[in-house]
Length: 290
Image (cartoon, rainbow, N blue to C red; front, side, top):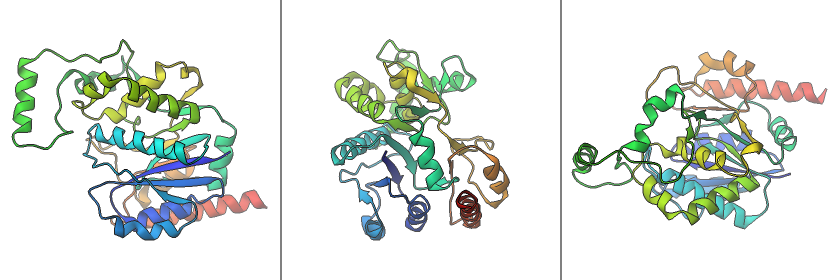
């Protein structure tokens, strides 16, 4: 059983290197998508690490834009062309494992064929606000003068938008990060490729990564193999558009969660938390070996 870890990267090469080393396992391959905005020279040394590959077709990703989903789908295609994997696990360069790599491998080995997503149904509190991502026009995918004035004008004059397919919507604040089975990954990219109207619609959405993948897969024949838990620890307690940066003050919570990964970390703000996690994982691994 092999897992492809797809890592979306836009900053902190040293932190990315630490992530790769913490998650190293003979059954794990790593595929790094470098945002086209950054200099690849700063990350070239990572190719010397075992089982590390770089996605060749890099995408210029704008925050909250559909370009993030485009980059993911292109990366999945390159991963699929490179070999056979039972899972594709999406991470960012600011994620980190909070369980030993062997424990993570054993968990997924016991759940081959399953997909792990986190989502909320259309009736949830999150959707009461997030529905504007679907119903209103957003120009974040683009970059041109007066774009937000034009966006405001379009939303004032044009009727509400509607999702282009007769689907129940699923999504949530934890929806961007997931682990897809091989079947789900193939279904996702094939579906988007064969529905041009969905791409046209998504170009004018905000934060589509938090609902598009879940909506497609939860309305698919594969929905019965989907588990509503992405096994990521993410702290949204501070509100706003970004999760809290985890620090050493969060160590106890991380030590007691059943989750496999956590985000988000920034070693320029607090590197000690990763030292604490490494020590905890080393202790856990030692207990298993005794």
